[in-house]
Length: 280
Image: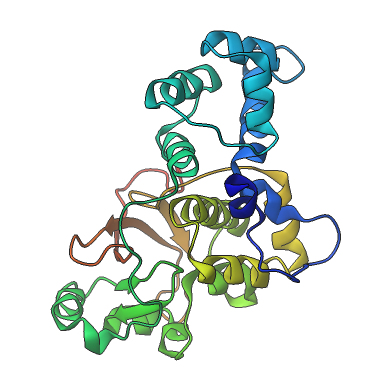
């Protein structure tokens, strides 16, 4: 079934060990998680009953049970809208619901290994963000462009295989430099879930997730929360970079999506306003 194929997230034969946590990237597991959360919000002490969800969206209980089992029937946008309302989904979760229902983004994925030299105009724009760090990532967060400030703040971008998500989730350096690292980790993992719903046929995402889940801490965090985040635009956080400043640095992330390059993300780290940081 289409939903089950997309929900696994692993290539045939891959097994990170133990129960497969990647399964929660699929629509069926997301619906179960969202229904459990809806029940908690209503003070039920249990997930919102399937029969109640089905009745509220005007469908049979059997239809909804099949949906949670991984069968994706013909879905009407109006039904999805009612389902999102009853489950209390936010904007990113609604987008993921539609991606799963209708087969991901309509935009084609660009080649995985684009090099900055192939994007001269975008690289020039990245350079113009000085002295603010700026960079561009592809669909699986490989670094395809960066400016001098980014390299000074984060020398790891100089590596040929530099990848933002891999660095942020699996390296000791990231856990020391990202203040309150666990919160960053939850967001990064939530972004992977969104990306896998948006681009179900992108093998690099499954490979990246499989690699990350080899880390026991990341594997535990992945199973603890079924969160979905589209991007980190406007995310405020703190950095501990002794080689740049003797004090903690407050920054805000601005994310732009270049229209001519679907799948790329143009990111600038700016100064955060002088109010409590980390309000993501």
